[in-house]
Image (cartoon, rainbow, N blue to C red; front, side):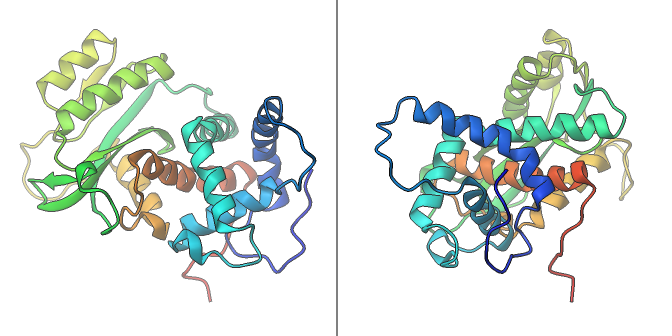
Length: 279
């Protein structure tokens, strides 16, 4: 196991216990890559330090080139982040930790119910216009995050689209992916934007979709729905996600997964880490 870096740690750094949970996935990734590399004997980048650097960006919201110099070069770190996003390594990490946390909570590793919701966010000026849109309801120009969580509020799936894509259309895509990756799920609570088409599509997949009831007036805590709202609150605590800065939507999805991974790792180990509220 890689030891703690010989430098003053940052609050976002992985502890030995949390790194132990992630190391098998990343070590297996490196071993697979080395099978097709030239193996010229160059310097090997410390995977733990790469993950620490990525989590630092995710937590603080800084640009890649502003990474502190005691991390690996920002170009190297971004290259790993891009590769892990493209080949599903970050998603695989999330799945591994999700199962561990559910088992620790005394639940079956695979959930049988989920909650779906969306969040519109503004985009940075560097985001390509073709990947943006206007949320007509909230009057936000940017992108929309769609997440699927289990009844504990733990992330299952994420999809980032232009804000102009309807919740109804995105909901059908999320249900299709949910049925494929989590076949045990038979119940889903969905947001207001998910209409009859989403409900009918879920029925075809064997998922009973319960859309949000919009008949009542005023604020009220809705059963199950508050879970996903809390999850969106957890996500937005990571400053990189206060706005969408990523050029590619798939990188935005990875940043959301990393925020969830940070929370999952702490829950799996029972650890707490300093936050911006701490003195």
